[in-house]
Length: 195
Image 1 (tube, rainbow, N blue to C red):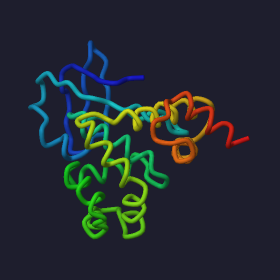
Image 2: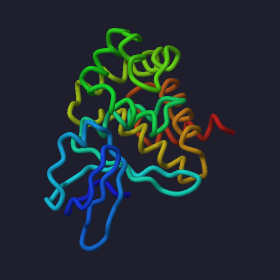
Image 3: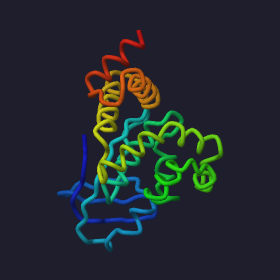
């Protein structure tokens, strides 16, 4: 798993960067919030990453803060929210305003983000309300529960589940056994429910 890159910023566009690390160029999809804080081309940069497995290959997503990456991982754990929509959300609303909208049940604020309709906004509020509060308590990183769910989902993906199936299975397992479950317990519960 690639968790961060440090090297020379070779190319920067609003939605992607290329970072040269020891002669190898890594392309990362980034949110606009990260683009706005990038140094000039040619400067050294350190970027946090999330490697996403798709049917047609691998995509590397990049973030300048742990808060952005943590929220991205939280978003993709919601059924119906893939990486493209998660990046769109991070590009359209700050992590702080997103969390406030979810906490307050403000679907109108979330619906104002391009690509998020009323139904998706309501789903985000419903599925993330409790988890956003845990995320805020553990800021700037992902809460332990979120890390355990993310690790469990990645393990299921490595076993052949699609990203969406893995996220749904782990989220359902977490609901059944409680928030304090570790990744191993979540994996066992998700596999048991699938059989």
